[in-house]
Image 1 (tube, rainbow, N blue to C red):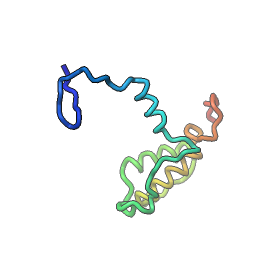
Image 2 (cartoon, rainbow, N blue to C red):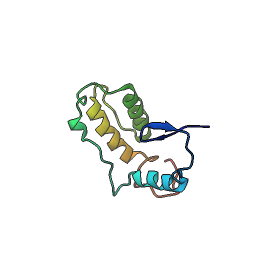
Image 3 (cartoon, one colour):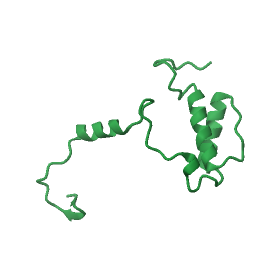
Amino acid sequence: MVPRFVRGVASTNFEAEPVPLASSLLILRLMKTTPHEPALQKDPDNWKTGDEPMTAAQRSYLETLATETGEPVEDDLTKAEASKRIDELRQESPRLSENRTLGDNSVE
C-alpha cells in the first residue's frame, strides 16, 4: 500500500480518484516546446552564473554538435555563450534541425 499525499499530509485513503493517465500525458504534451511556442526561459545574458566557464556537460554536447555540423567550437566559452552556441548548432545539426523534413534520416 502506497500512501497518498493530500495537501502535504500522507494519507492511506484511496477513495480519491487519481488523475487519469491520458490527462497527465496531455499536460506533458502541452508543456513541450514547439518552434512556434518557445519555452519560457531566461535569456542566458541574464543568468547569474552566465559568466562562469561552461560546464563539462555543455562542453561535451558542444563537441558532439560540432562533430555533426563540422563547425568549430571555442574552448573558453562562458555558460551563457555555450548555451547560445548550442542553440545555433542545434539548428544546423542534420539530426536535430527543425528544418529537416520528416522521414529524411539520411546523412550526407
